[in-house]
Length: 509
Figure (tube, helix red, strand yellow):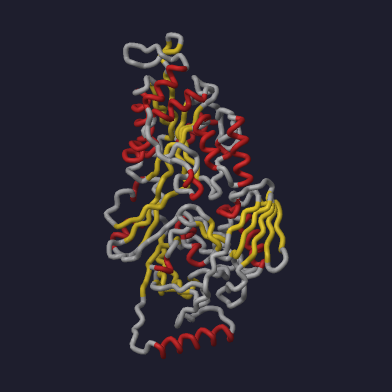
C-alpha cells in the first residue's frame, strides 16, 4: 500500500516590526527591517494594535520541549515549535514542515519543506529532523508513540527515511514531535521554527514574541505573557480574576466542568470502556457481551456521569476520526435485541425480582471501579441500573486505585471500567490481547485480530474493523472524554483547539 499525503502549500509571510531579540544574521535582520519600513510607508495613518495573551507556565519546570514534565508547560510547546505534521480536529495529519509523506510497507519517506527557516535564519534540513527524532525518542512525551521506529536515515534531496518494526498505515499521525535545530536540544530554549520565540522576561515570568520569519502571518497576538505558577490548582481563580486569559483542562477531575466562563470543548482520544473477564460468567460468549453493550445507555452516561463532556461510542475508534465518516457512529440503545440475545442463549428463566437465572442461580456480575474517579463511579451506578432492565444484576465494587490495579492483575473481576488514551494513529491493540498491555483477561477474537492487523498495516477498511468489532465485542466502549479550554467572556477570538494543540488557530485570532 502506498499512501501519499499531498502537500498543502503555504506562502512565506514576513511580519513587520517584530525583530527584537531574535537571533538573526545581518542579512535576515536587514531584510526584516526593510519590509518594516516599507509597511510603515504604505500605511502611515494606521496605528498598530498590540494584542496580548496571558498564559500560565510552571516556573519549576522547563520550557525545553524535550525536558518539560508538567502538562501546563507541555501545552506551550506548539507555540514555539512546529512538527512535521499538524493534526486537525479529525486527527487528519496536515503537512506542516513536511512537504510530502509517503508510506511504502514499513518505510516512511518524508520530503521536507526546504523553504522553512529557524528563528536564526537557517533553513531546515534532514539532519535537523533526524536530530529531533532521536531527541524525541528519548523523551517520555513522545517515546511511546515512536516505539515502532526501528531506524532512520537521511535520503536524497533533503528527505528523511524512517523504517518501522511493523507496518503502520497511520504512522504519519505520529510525526508530531517538535523539530529543533541540530545541536540545540540541550539548550534552555532550543532553536525552533514556531510561531513564537522567547524574547525576554518580565516581573512574573517570560515573554514570547512572534517569529518574524514564520511562514504564516500572525494577525493579532503580538505578545504572549507567561505568568509563573507553582501548579495547576490556582488556574481557575487566576482566570476568573483576570490574571490569565486562557486555560486548559482535560477534565480528568470535574473541577472545571461547570465554570462560569466561556469555553470550547476539546475532544480527547481518551477511551472509557468496560473490560470483561473471559474466564467469568458468560463473557466467553460474544452474544452475552453484545447484549451487555446493547443494554447500556451511552447518552445517559454522557449527560449524567460526564456532564455532557464526552461523546458516546460503540467502537474503539474516536467518532471524530476522519476515517469514521464511512461508519454509522450512532449509539442508540436496543433493549429488545439485548433481551433476544440473552433468550437465544437459553437464559430465559427469571426469579421473582425479574433477574435472569442460570441453572437456578441468579446471574450476578461484579463491576470493578477505581473509587478515586468520580466520573467512573457515576457511570458504574448508571450501568448497574441499566443492566437491571435486561434482568442482569450488577454489584459495583469500588476500590482504591492500588487495590483496583491488583484485582485486575489477578483477574479478580467480572467487568471493570477503564480508560486509555489512544495514540494518534488510533492503535487499540493493547486492549485486544489477554495478558498484554491492558488486555488482562480479554476474550480472544481471532478474526477481529486478523482484520485489525490488516487495517494497522494499510490504514484502510476501518468499516470492516468496526463491523467485526461489533460482532465480537471483546470489550465494551462507552465514551471518548472531552476537555475544555476556558477563557474570559471578553475574549473575542474564534477558538479552535485540539488535544495536540490547544492554540490550533492562534494565527487567526
